[in-house]
Image (cartoon, rainbow, N blue to C red):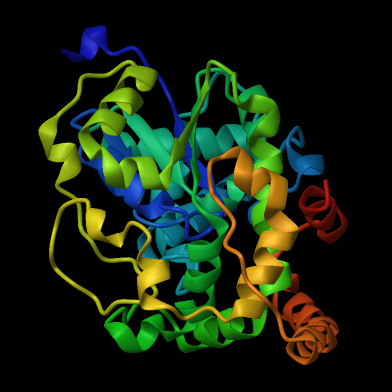
Length: 344
């Protein structure tokens, strides 16, 4: 397939609950000769732009500031972003290329995505930011050429991965800042993580048959990687390339950093073999995610629970919620909207 035959104009958005294989999907798509997955999660929706700002016309300086911030995040990562003014000259190039549209945040964002993709020699940009799962309707409305790939994974290994994510800094992932380790540790509670999984899956439910949305189960990708990637390529309107399967295996919260490549099928159901979740954590997760979990073929395990341990988790919940709220305040541009999207 040559560039003239390329079906998708993009951008492509990879979304889903955190720890559900979104990073792996981003690597797969980056290995396609036409698609460039940006280097880091951008967090444009919710953290840089609330829905009330979608149509707001920016001044030239405001637009340049937004483009510079996006360039900075893509270069440094959201966690480690430095001074955006380093990218002012490049940001001006992005904004000056907008001739046929008002300088709204959503227009600047789309032009930034295309600029970075073309800078890397590819026509289609891909933004892999899991939290966008809460903004699928917005993405489809704002970007008529966009395609969305939604990753879904069994909530119990998601819970396990979130539980130990804070340790990544000491497993060879040096780009994981200490303050992010602390925030992640405090954020963890089986009730809140399970509720977020439930909200993420409910958010994509209205779009299961949408022609521009594809749901991919993490487990299917591990069982039949080539078949699933071919299905993804068909959805995007591009040819399959074998090198799409040759991806880094790094990214796990449970294993040390590795330079191995390929889709590691041995990780399927590893959470059952390796342990790490208490019976109470599994019980709470299954109780909260229940019907949605089973809808996607994830069978519940019969687990008993100690009432005293269960009481401890519930006593700890308001403390964890309060601390998490304070630590995440700066990550939400419109706090009521962010909460509302999670409680739909």
